[in-house]
Length: 77
Image (cartoon, rainbow, N blue to C red; front, top):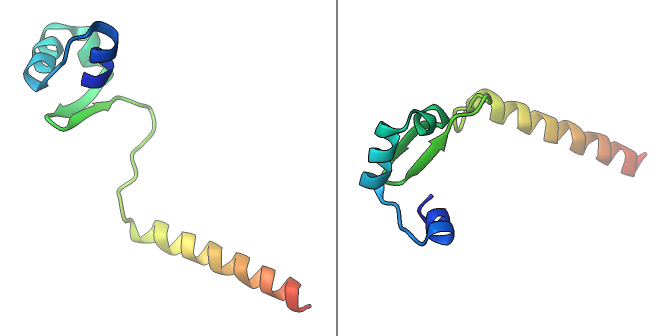
C-alpha cells in the first residue's frame, strides 16, 4: 500500500497514517479485513485455507501417486 501511494501521490503511508484513515473512513474499513505494521489483508469472499492442513496434503499426495501409477502403467503396457 505504501509503495502504491508513493507511486500515485508521492506520499509514503506508514502504519499510523493508515490506521488514522482506517478509523476515519468507513469505505476503507469496509474493504479491509485486517492490518498490522507488516501489511493489509483485503476482505474477499474466498475462504482462506489453513496452511498445512493434513487432509489437503494427503489428498494431493494421493492424487499425484495415482497419476504416476497411471503414467507408469501406460509406459510399461
